[in-house]
Amino acid sequence: MDTLVLQFLIPIISGVIISIITALLTVHLSLRRFYSEKWWERKAEAYSNIVEALYVVRMNQQAVLTALESGQEFPDEEYDILAKRARSAQSEIVKVTSIGAFIISQDASDALDRLARALQEAQNEPALYSVIDFELAAIKQAITDIRDIAKRELKYR
Image 1 (cartoon, rainbow, N blue to C red):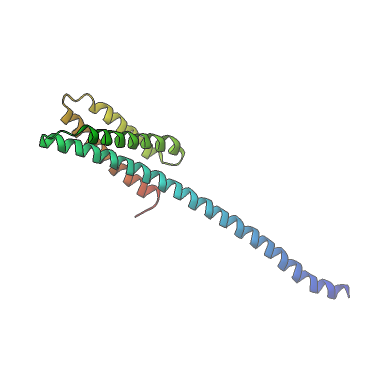
Image 2 (image 1 turned 90 degrees about the vertical axis):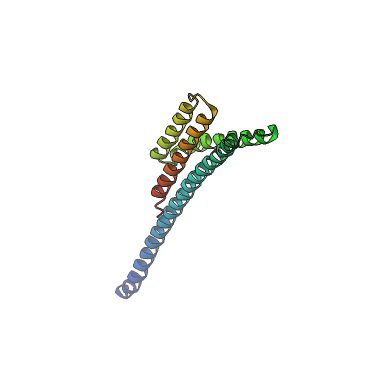
């Protein structure tokens, strides 16, 4: 009788043990995938915010350059709006770079450092037109660099 009970219980117990191990493994793998996807989303958001802020700065500088080339002057209100948007975008770049330093890659951080140095060097140009032209070139390069780095980091083709 004991043998009969054991023959009946052994498959049940082994099935329960296998089920528990499978459930634990499934939960572990699911959580791992969830955290991985969340991390990817945070990286994507950080890169998106950086590129968007760079784009705003670029468009503002392009508007100023266009006005200079055409000989027009900005009304004070419009200039104030552009300046406020540019400051906000630059602030966003600094924020995302600082807060996202553990999210974005070292390459992205280096690209933003190169941009900051280039923007600082632009201030040494003798004419406002040259300053803006120099800044635009640096911003365009940074957008290209960050976009390429983001594609590589996010494994986007």
